[in-house]
Image: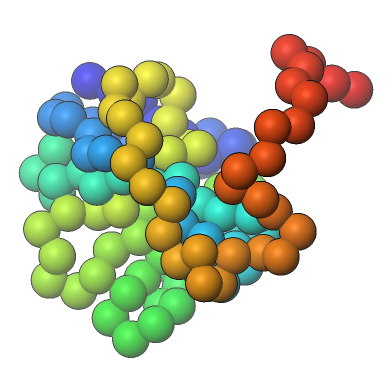
Length: 129
Ligand SMILES: [Zn+2]
Ligand SMILES: [Zn+2]
């Protein structure tokens, strides 16, 4: 069982099955919703995804039939779901455990932030303050 949660802990979930391949989505609605260059996501079957604590789970319909679920207290994006879909699209940054999934692709490069490059090799630091 993998665990996930929002920043404040008022939304918690568990995953009993496998997490799909990882996709980095650069579409404009993901950038806005996450306040970041892109959103890292993977599919999880409905039957494997269990919401455990939902006291502040909020929802926004960002396009017809597609809802984005988030913590309305702290703002963490948790998952998105299309009406009738058999899976949720998990926001991987909300996981507390390693999904053991592989990166597959960057999508919606046509809407990518101009200031972010998928091909750069910037200096890396273990921590920063
Ligand atoms: Zn929260
Ligand atoms: Zn997107």
